[in-house]
Amino acid sequence: MRHASLTRRKLLLIAAGASMVRPVLAGEADGLSSLLAARWQQRYGGKAGGLTFYALTPKGEFFATTLDGITAQSHFRGASTTKTFTAAAIMLLDQQGRLKIDDVLTAPMPGKTEPYLPDTSGFAIPYKGQITIRQLLSHRAGVFDIANQPVPEGLPLPYSGKSYLEWQLKQDPNHSFTEDELIGVLAATQASNSKPGESYHYSDSHFTILGKIVERVSGTRLDQFNSRELLAPNGLKNTHFVVDGHETTLPPPAISGFSLQDGKVTPHDDYNYSYDPGSGNVFTTPADLTRWIRRLVRGEAGISPAQVARMCDVVPDSQYGLGISHKVSGSFDLGFGHNGGTEGYLTDLAYNPATDMAYVLVSSLIDFDALVDEIIWLDATAAAALQLIAKS
Image 1 (cartoon, rainbow, N blue to C red):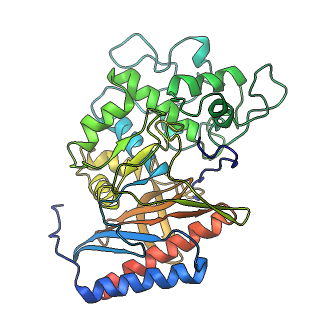
Image 2 (cartoon, rainbow, N blue to C red):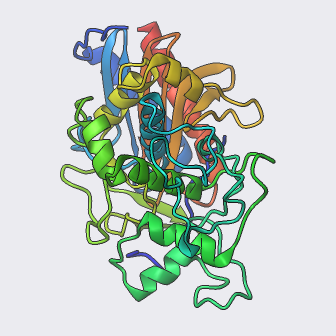
């Protein structure tokens, strides 16, 4: 990582027929822009970064930003919104009968003799024979979070007591992380957060394992499977998943990102983004990501409405389903989607079937000094923008 001196901290989730698209009316655009500008000024004053909002609604599409030169097709790092794609890939394979989400990881894949994870020491993670695919999707498998937790101390490993990602990046800033490698760290450390099914515990490693399962079942690397089965059929031409550690910058046009930590603002436009395969490695745009969540939740993205209903069947203690959460701001129902946070960006994504309103709201300043407060603030800003559109 280009900014390895900063402690890496990534967001943990807190928990029919296309509508006609029309241009935004000038007054509506001014209203949204003024709203975003006022919200940003109130919270961050003159700090670097800003807000970018895009929505698809029955009244048409709406776009506003506080940043110069940014459009709905400007790229940013979507972080954990990646999980909606990985979950969709799993549910598509389940829909096709190529896997069963209630199988344990040691069970044979349908029509094959091999298990979902190889029966080798490099994949011998704790409780492997008890973990189901569904538990991985719902963050209830108890798997240790390699991306966000330091490896336990006292182990005969060179990264014991350290962040594995930061340790590896010090060896090679352009190291390309893989599912096999990260699962291998879980096996080598034998670290675990809980027994499977005991409780909700958000872990990026759950989705790293799911990415490996997609590869094993389909015979295709996760990013390639998603590109063929999800991105291309849904017209997401400006979205892809980073697997090469040398791909450190966003494609142009791009939204510049900044991080606030210990009172200091740092630019984050250039860093190794391959660290979170299956869980947080998507490059995308506001228009693409909004189109994706709308089509997914409406059952139009290739995942059947019945499968989508399973994904959106959230558990009350976490408001998390299968790769999708139910998002609210106070009493305002934002819909179903996912948050995403990484160095430089905090993203709010949802679609509400009741109102047929989908949106993405991106802050290009992630506030590690008050991350929970920023998430709540971003949700409230999205709610205010959607209410403004509804009244227009």
